[in-house]
Length: 118
Image (cartoon, rainbow, N blue to C red):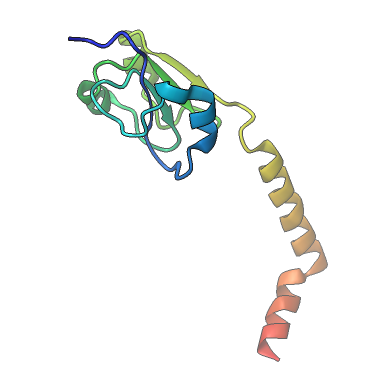
């Protein structure tokens, strides 16, 4: 018998699901299984083989920018809704870029190597 309750599962790389649990409550089942209807994806490849195994999936929500790991044509054929988070990690990427620029322009890595060697 097919379940009428939506079941949300996390596919990969999320080790702490406290935020998801607080938002989704009883809808979250961290174990991906055949009853899963909605998946939260980070890097897991979602292709035809994956969707054959999990036939009840109705929606895919991607943590992050882009859809590189999701076969959109298969999802479209199966009427699966696919969403992403276009501003995921924007602040972290900007901070890292500025830090790298400062490191290069101020020679921080060469000073660090010098300090380690002496």
